[in-house]
Image (tube, rainbow over all chains, first blue to last red; front, side):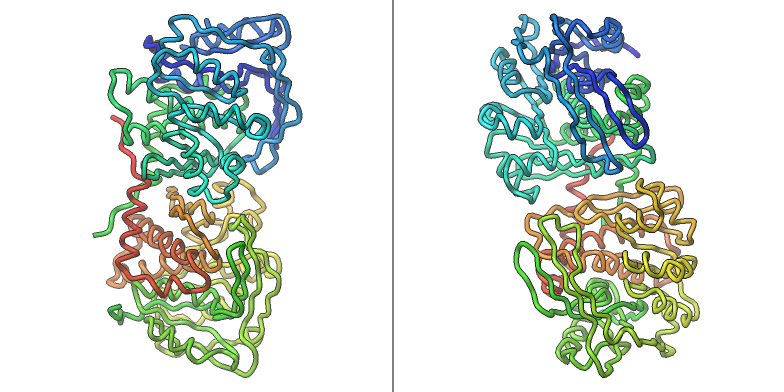
Length: 313
Length: 313
């Protein structure tokens, strides 16, 4: 692909090994992690930079793979120890990940220090990781334009105070349906989003797995189904790819200091929907590495077609 | 409302008493039944006629209520015995109805005989009821233009042969997500729809509760989220209202022998989505009786707004 040189999207999150089992097969210690999936999706729109840490068991050719695919890895530290590891499975209900084991490993002592280039980045995605680390990165930023974050059930449960401190500072909050219910103690998604907005984020994007997403921006709602797929092999990373698509698109469009507006958010969500749909069509990051920008545009247009209906006079 | 006089939609299904409990309240022996909900939704577009049977415990003022609301009740027989009765509950997951008790009662000996007017109707909705009764009505029709049916888990389980005999004759098959999986023994909805199509129906519309619906027509897919609601009180009848909206709209539009086309199906599905969204906002048929056609049009336009996004050049 044509290399995109604008480097304005910073992503902190995990770069990890995943072992995943689904009804359709399994993988052992393949490349994964929230920052990996997000960056490999955002790279179609901008050149993302990852802030993360890996152990000395991390394969050198993964750095090459990321670099070759338009991802800046200069912010990935290598330290003695083992790389973050997640083991999980999915049954036929591919909407729910079941964790067997999470080894934080080298992330437990990670203290990210941004260089000047990173500190000056305007678009920041704090992908799913310990909210203390997300906050640490945030607090080093000089003048960010749009800051988004994701989180997951274990942080909502174990670090609610730290998460809420972070949410006060957030523009776009990506969260899945079960997690926003957990965070707000409210079952209805509209009510839950209203409660979540009071915690700080201007925009809430609730991810609903195979049912798509629903976005709350000012007083407006935008909702769109997922792209219908006949073969879903592995949902791991779908949410990260979704957010990576949204943020990559926004970083590319808002670079010339256009203001964030609903048109762009909606388009970004469609790109996120497309990236997530590719992500789940193969194990690990395989499919994300195979597709071209043209494939993304094609699927964007297909989503337009499959959701189109005429107005009534 | 202005009375619609075109009488071309025949609905067979249950006219019943429901006792329902949800986290938000409960009702005891209120008006319900698949034909009731469908007809009270279709009536905004045409004058539907119900074929059903009730016991002598059925309240006279329910006939008046239906008649006053543009529903033809001449095909509802009254016999000695008790009216069909369903008792169920929903927990916070309002997508799943839990049956406590079903008393078929007078429906167990029902042998519907259509008069000439009914036999000549062109649009027919075989709402959820024993497939033998659905078939019996179908077989009396002289020259139907569009025949749709719905079904439920107990018929898929207990009368698969009878259901499959019926499906061979069907144009539009309404079925919910769990049920199409049960019918086809396939988890993936696209694959399940392909299998279901081979059973006969030209169009499959899969209902996904609060996540909306997905329609399979020829080689095309149309999918749309449900209308987002902050207050859902009772999902009973949502699927019937949805189908009633689709069929009422199609009956009104195709009356002048226009052919069925995708534009109309998609518009019908939006009307169905709107009717279902009103249905669940109060117990029993209360909200369906309160709304005006203007309210339906307003919500149709809102669905357009909340799902709109711009194309990419």
